[in-house]
Length: 574
Image 1 (cartoon, rainbow, N blue to C red):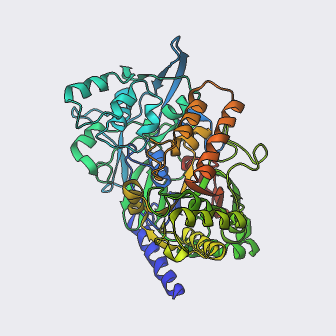
Image 2 (cartoon, rainbow, N blue to C red):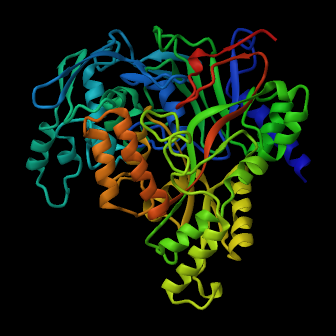
Image 3 (cartoon, helix red, strand yellow):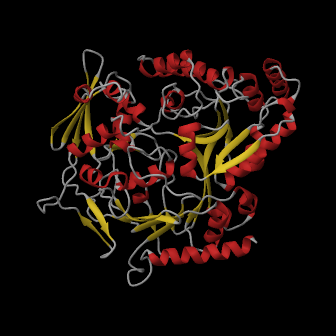
């Protein structure tokens, strides 16, 4: 059955590559990189709305923000701007951005197969200005946009919180305009933007410069096209690549932008086109072995064979990656509103067995959320007993306490429990392994449900399931981005419906208290204990590694943080 399906997928992939112009007269002149995005469509290319790694990957190549985190070191480097930071007497920062000049807006023209410069209403080339970046920041903060990531900006821009969190049903348009005007971001001239922060947090520049929403956005396109502005027929951008096509059911591709001048940190691309298909890991791996894909994430089911194969083992790369894989609880949905049951489920998971026998990619069992190695994050050397781990005796003890508190005679009286994950062979194998652990350790039956990635993200936002899975990768290289950024009570990424005033106070002090790195780490230790053990709002499972297969003719970098930077890759003669 599978072999027949794989053959069909090979044919579909070959047809897809043919339809997007990678064969024919230009084939020998172009360098085409072929990858797999995973089984689901990219949810959005709108920088103000993007919340997931698939979206961020494409957005980062077509909209360069003010700065970008280096994919190896995590350090925020220059992107579209350089900047100066001045600390003021009243405990704020004045950050002045000087924008690169001469960067034109561009659009891919499928009729000519060329990236072309965008012209304004006067027929002149339209260039990226400080006004375009100001518009992007304010659009992200606008409560009408409903950006899940606005919560990050409100702590980095003075006056932003009052504007972003205003109740549109209660505040007049005149008062909203006044709140907008009070946001401390202003355009000084066409190529200078100034932002005042409400504090002196060291990571302010990482938020304002290094995150995808600080890139310019084309207001004229958004005003004209509304929700469809980022579709291929409408989108205008300016980065090292432009969007070439987006077939929502099968693939997405970007093409080198000849008008991007290249900088030390964002060079001109050597790879002409980067093309992704949307496939499960197993058919993608079949395409890789057949020479139709250049880079893939190996299926968990094939890891033993890959490691034993003399060729594939040489193409396998494993290294640490600054992400955390976890399960979250909706703490408002019975019976997961009981902390003892949540602890029992967490104690019952043998994380070491999971990484040794299921994921098999050198992942590290996680006891808490913030990935060790981030600035101020706890480590196994400093805090080996922090958080929660596998303890079957404690699992049974907590389960007994849960049944007692719930007034139940036995497990049969528990309401049904469902674990949901997005469609993926890997996520399915992990969920099935944990389902079996819960059955073996607790005699508890948990059902598994799946959804397509975009639908799944909407479900988490609107009505998160009893138990759900996510991975979190750093947006900036600080523990704040994990512990406070995801699980503070007002975070747009907190799908647990859990809040704890002590936790909020701890992470706020760690972020804005002007403390040393060691003092901050001590606060995160306390906060992580509340999150993962005392209230058990989540189940930390493992800290990621990068696990990929790459053909030997691909010259590449391996991102330890954030998205890949394909403008730094090359394809050698083969």
